[in-house]
Every structure is written in structure tokens, then in C-alpha cells.
Image 1 (cartoon, helix red, strand yellow):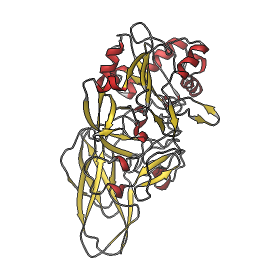
Image 2 (image 1 turned 120 degrees about the vertical axis):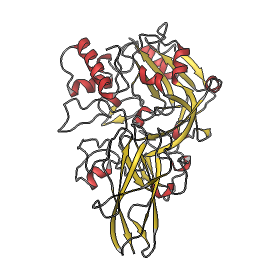
Image 3 (image 1 turned 30 degrees about the vertical axis):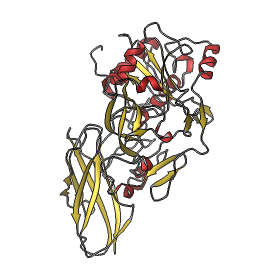
Image 4 (image 1 turned 90 degrees about the vertical axis):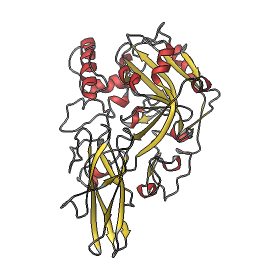
Length: 433
């Protein structure tokens, strides 16, 4: 197993599940997976580090001070730019018309489990600890880096998307007639930015990464998340060391400016092409372990559950799928008797999109859209297509992308109870007058 590619979700799950079965015996039921993720019996955060209650209290007290904001989101949310879903805000696609490749920070979607914390970068520390580091530093005596330490290291710039795993969730119900739980996003839970920061590999190496390390567990500084009365602690999700060393960025800038509070100030992870939950915001500490790590965010959430999946769910979700969106208001009104240029964007976690087809008659016929260059490999491609409506009435516009691996958007997607990874072709309604 030492040569396995742990950046692949199926391989990662197979290797990790085998290791846990070897350690604990038997089959991993869904209940057992949930208990592991929640830290029951000492198997969650700190699984590789036996801790006393006093040590845990000291570590909690030593966390970087984070003040709660007045509301769940700090930045203005004008209705022409956003659809607000409680603590989350979805970008309106018509707001991206004419905006270029990058999503401006003022219209970048917001996904908060609780609320945006307000953190002072002067007192903030990034803390690394665990059995995967030389000397096995403990949570209450970690290796620390200041904000200024990170600014002084060699930086890299990465243009990449961050996308919520539930992007498109609402279409399970509206297009496929299936009930799912979670925020009913349309397609606006994605944004592309130019991120600048320090490779996570650099910081791990400076902290004393050992060859024994197998997983890391980054954790944010946002308030504890409670689900059904159960406090699950701060948001955290494991990454294999192989992925952490490959292309993950400790980002402190977004589109040439310091991260805004809602997008992770002072420092966040950016995990290219993977589900958005992996790109932990307001990063506070990273556990580095010489054994597999689990949390609720890769056991009870961010797996596929439902009648077509095993009891414990699918492998933890990693890579995002192929999607397309029109830069049009939902149910837009359009003038008849003239030619319109339809604009849109398509993207894939597998790499570049090579082809986009558009249907102007509800899927009966398809035409190739004109792509605006290949674009960055981890971002979207912009495209356009002229259309002269044949007459007034209701129309459904469809866009279907194909990426460089040959993956094509399907007409429908299999059901899962949490509504993740909706990648089917979306039927976008417009009215021509």
C-alpha cells in the first residue's frame, strides 16, 4: 500500500478502511464510521495523541482569539449579487456577466457552518502538532508560525476555483423530484480567485514532517458546529499527506488583496480541484499524524448516502465534477426580434473543459459554443453562443460540458440523501417577449 495514490478518493478510502479494520477488526458500519468521525473512544481529533483533559483545556484557551461578527456574514449582501441562505450566500450568475476570469471578492459566494470570526492577525498563530512530526509535539505545545513568518516565506500564486460540494443541490428536487437535505443552492456556490500564499509542503517540512506521517487534520477557528444538539467542535477535515505535499496552498491573499474575513482571513487552505470543505477557512491548527484521521466532515458528511450506496456511504468525497452555468438571471426575460449573445462558464475538478455544447430547444438539438481560450487548469472556461429566438414564449437553455478526461455532464445524476455533486445538465428557463 505504500505506493498507493492517496490523492485518489477511491484508493484513499480503500487503504484507510483496510488500516482501520486491521486495527479495530470487523466491518465498518455507518454507526461505527460516525462514532470514529465524532471522536468517540478517542478516534477523532487527536487520535494519534492520548491527551489529558487539562491539556485539552490549555490548548483550547491558547487558540488565537476570534471574535464573533454581528451576523453570520460580514460583507454586504446586496440582493442583485446574492441569494442569502441563512449563514450562506449564493452568487447570482447574472452578476458575473462582464467580470472577466476571476470572481470579485464582493460577489464570491460564502459557505459558513456557523459564522465568520473576526481574527487579529497580530496575535494569530498557525499551530502544528502530532505524531507525524519530529518529536511528536503535543496540541498544547505545538510548533507555531506567525502571520509575519508566513509572509516572509517564498510565496506562490494559484488561480483556482473553490466550490461547495452541494453546489446545484436544489436541482435534485426541481429537476429530478427528489428530496434532499442541505442548502438548496442552484449553481452559484462556486468562485474562481487568484490565491497567493505559501505551499503547505513548505510549512510541513519546516515543522518537522516525518516519513511516518500519513494524514493531516486542518481545523478552522470558526465557532463550534452543533448538529441536532450534538456539538461536533470546530470544522476540520483530514487530508492525506500525499495531497498536502502536492499542490495545497496556505493562502493569505485573494485577487491581490489580503483575504476578506468571510473568505478565511488571515489564512486559509486552498485545495485545488477538491470539494470546498477541504479548503478550511480561518485556519488555526493542523494535526499531523502517523495513522489515519477522521472527523464528522469525512464520515457523516461529505460522503454519498442513499439506497444505491453501502451503509457507511461512499468514499469520502474529494474531486469535484463537471458543471456549466449561463450568466443569466434565473427565469430571465429577453427581448424577441433580435440576436442575443449567450455567455456562460464551465468547469471540472478533473482539469480543463475541452468542449461546451448548448441546446436552445430544451435538449432536442445541440450546438458547440465558442470557448474563450483554454484557461487555467483549475478554474473555469468562459464561452459564448449567439441566439436569435424564433419567437416569443418560454424556452429552456441547456449547457453541457466535456472535460479533458472525457467526462461529460449527464442528463440526470444518481440520488444521494445529502444532495452532493449534482453534475447533470441544468435546464435554465427564460421567457422571450
